Image: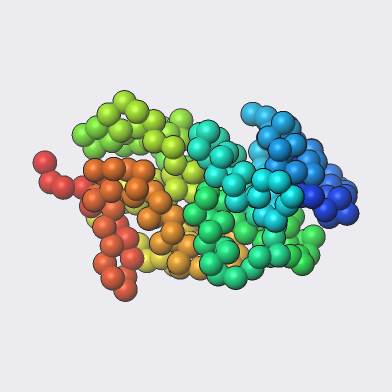
Length: 230
């Protein structure tokens, strides 16, 4: 089985060394960069996960994540940062992060959450072969390709946004509480708040354009996929 490759981007060389040593001991292939600019040079199609510091000299981690997502790259990103307020966390998720770990952190936590993000394919894995596409007019959710298209144009969703949309669309009409969405999409990833769900769904709706209305919510209850009747 091919090793997962983790790209660490942090301007603190001691943190990079500790992470590199321990992640390699867990069987990962590790690449290290000490700035966002260097990180772009070392980011390849073979990168499976990015551990990204927020506060660095030069380009910030937030800005780098934003650029990565703007380029259509959906490689999972975990922020490692001393900025640990709820607003900081929501900012991280709003620019496309998959998880957010506050410094100082335990190595065991980083390893556990890295594995959780890398293994978080449960919703997609459940899809049956005959259900490889979900189609509503010009909206096509391609399960095998993990891709969403509207009127022939690819919609650039993050992995998490895609999994939330797929969960809702595969269970049309079912009202999911935020807790149920967290348990299904994030699974073993701890510390995910209900507001995190709201942030991801708000971003996803913006990207879906006219189809945003298909995702409805009932205040105090949760979200569902509710396509209009033909």
